[in-house]
Length: 544
Image 1: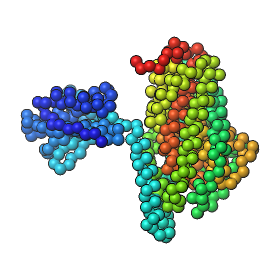
Image 2: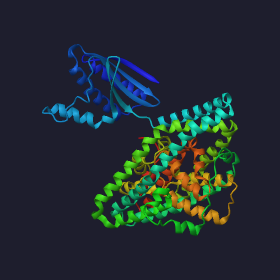
Image 3: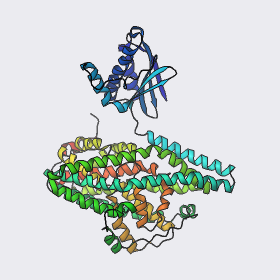
């Protein structure tokens, strides 16, 4: 943690701002973040000054703190309790007061007030690290392993069973149930939003159909790669041994005919109640296409769909902060029933997950060269450095503005096409997630001793291809859809619990694969429609 402090008053305010700029720059804040921090500091600080008993001699302490990549500014001063944000009047005759109110209100998520030991403390969040969650998850992973190992050494068999059944398993179960509660609405509105987004871009002509076709072909090849990796890794009996106690689920993998017939639900309620993702996908496609055909008459309905999509994603975001705790619980539970040798088993799965990425990039490179009929060397040379962004953020939606900027400025894709192809294609280019889930499900089927024949592989491939279109592009969403993929493979859905601990480790590399698939589709679309600036594409990847 990095910490810088100094006194602040009206007299030394200007020199304090210079000091603030220097230290924020040193800590890695961008110019935009520094300007925002200075603006919020100015408005907050001078409100504290004006509310003090003696504004002329008012003095406080300013602290700049960097912790786990987050950068914040805090100002503290002794005096009577005074919250500069609560005390503001939303309606005021003073124009300056209204101006200040508008500034602080627009940045309310970056501001907080606290009172401690007779001091008023204002905190300003300048920068939020995209890797903070990754640090916490890794801390939870290590803590859970150590806690489980210690408990196994000090507790009797009865004590271990008590801790598992009374503490660890209920926590795991509640988290999984909360995820499954959100699964149906999240996927339904995510798919509908993608379809209405495609219909809103009517001026792009037939590009929506072309984009979908390109994405499906590419995704199918990547899923075949996932099947190959699953067969290569083979059975891992140790995974099943952990779940033997109390696991009486008997799920039959469906055949292709049952899969196709079962896509159409008897009513619109059952799919959400049973979390049948293929049926939810059908309903979303059915109503999404109806909305698309309605045109401007359905404008308000489309706004409702977009709001519900953001709302369900925000609801999912509420669960993500407790993911490190759940990871710790999951790893502790695992260590109670196994030993450190199990870590090597998980290491094998993680290795296979990361091995999928270079193979996916190879497929995308060939795809760009063959379908786009252009040298893929500049593409692969430029995209690899950029994929660090989605890898660190673990959220393809959050990095979408940067992805569109990359396509325009580095690859030379037409701006209008980029604004259409990247957001719409994101739902149909889950290459990284698709390869991972189909691989894991196949490994677990082999581990359960179930047969893997051609009939099963064909049915499983088709079902997985359809399910891939339901994957939400947010962190932690794979746990939601993993249960459905397991069900198609004839694997008990409860075995999803085995992967809670390692799923966050693979989230980054999956997201990078997803974004790479999205970019490749947009690039090929631009090439086929003569909307690619070849001069920009051929330029070296140097910084401006």
